[in-house]
Amino acid sequence: MKKMVFMLLLFGISTYCNMNIIDNDEFLKQKSVKDLSRLGCDYLQTWYYTEVLQVNTALENNQELCYNKIYQKGGISMYNPQLKTFLKVADCGSFNKAAEELYISPPAVVKQINLLESSLDLQLFTRTHRGILLTDAGKSLYHDAKYIIQYCHDSVSRAKNAMQNEDCIIRIGTSPMTPGQFLMDMWPQIHALCPDIKFQLVPFENTPENSREILKNLGKNIDIVAGLFDDGFLKSRKCAGFLISHEPIRCAVSIYNDLSEKKHITVSDIHGKNLMMIQRGWNTYLDVMRDELLQNHSQINIVDFDMFTVSAFNQCENGNQLMICIDNWANVHPLLKVLPVDWDYTIPFGLLHSPNPSPTVKRFLDAVAQVINHSEN
Image 1 (tube, helix red, strand yellow):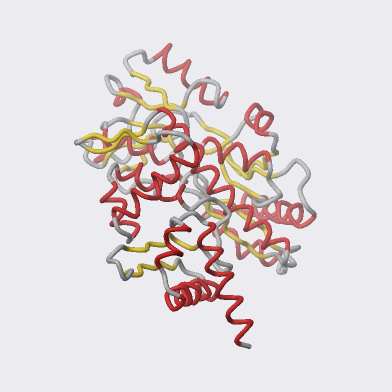
Image 2: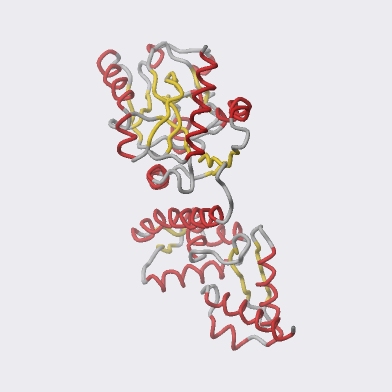
């Protein structure tokens, strides 16, 4: 028994060292067997926790050994944990602020960034007396690191799902732009038609990279995503769409804007103001709307944005602008109010799914169709 425990301790020590969080040789030379045993015990504890474990151990020479986050049951992250530190430093713009949010010391944060830069042979930050700024290489890595981390988490989820019998589970991708609440409203009727089917909500970050990856791989980690679409969108994203409704196009406006006091607005109310619209080519319905507004209401200044994200809603509120949206997005931003407009523009809204859905997804879509038909009759 003692031999087994000792071997497990050594395994924990070697695993931590291989994670490059500490300087392996220097650390091992300084520490006693008692210290190493304690390190092994700390590691083994992570196998029994599902929450993030933060370990701060004071060393005998007044140095600080700071282990980064150990994620989920099983202990080890699939990606270099220094990437997580890198993202936090980039977001905070300061080693000290990042250290506070990570609950580790500033020197430990600096050391992790130095190790990451050294291992990649890249300079990720420019250090100045005013703070730190991402270099061009850092900006490139920042963009991809978020995708890498999310993909690793999704990979683990897919592996866990593969271990379970999930034949009757519908995995619904959710984000602020792809709400699942409207399906929850249908749930009693759907459950009556398919009592064996269950929902699993899968949150994801609504970025261009995630959107493309998820939609072209529907049926793998996520079965269904709710959203706007047209034929061109479905073709380019290599997915299929189940039409639920043609949603009226509304306008979102800051609650501090005078227009927010109205129950509905007219097109003339928008004259002389900025109206945020997604870039041309994203949706034919919106392109037609854009052309007609430019032709008949040239007093409206149309401002383009790339993608429906929370950042776009922030831009709308901060700039005191108006933005096209639908009723399903009424709760995306607490400082924006969604108002009807006296126009007849609509846009298709429904469920995006694989072109070759599983039998369970087919049954689910059939049930949704029955619920919709029943509500219309």
